[in-house]
Image 1 (tube, rainbow, N blue to C red):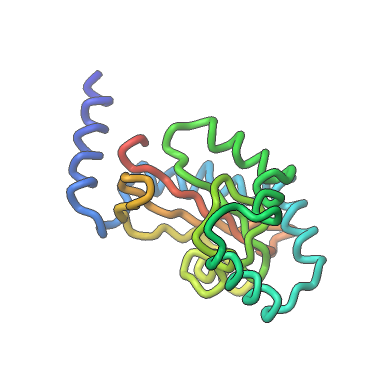
Image 2 (cartoon, rainbow, N blue to C red):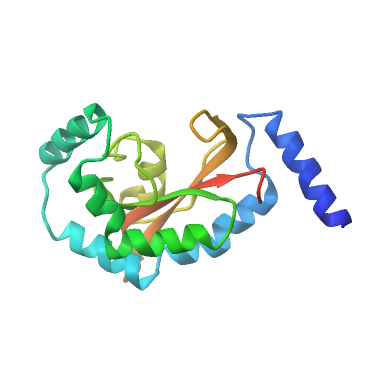
Length: 181
């Protein structure tokens, strides 16, 4: 009971201080469980297949523009969510209450799978992709705690590389609700 109370107290402190660094239990989760998901066979297979399509950056940016302008769910967005990898990451999301969202990106930062519609299709120009993909070297990236207006919750985004044969081939971002960890 004391531990649970302590966690709620810590979450309350965090909630009052958006923009601060993630608490230690989030860092431990990132470097353990979440980093290990970067070698999950279903995720690796989906990223490998997406990378093999050979999309150009111009094609990705055009789809990103369309994505941001589309208010609802287009068929190609639903396909990303309903793919084998999309179903798999929804199962991961359902396994713990702190997973607010999960999305998988290819080697250029384009969405491969997602649990919820992201605000854009291409993450390649954002820290969540650049710092976790790290030019193919791969690294765990933990962003600062932020208030998510759409979820009405304090979240931290953790991004880990998707690794295949010791090389980063993509990345996964986990939105973690710090009040539920």
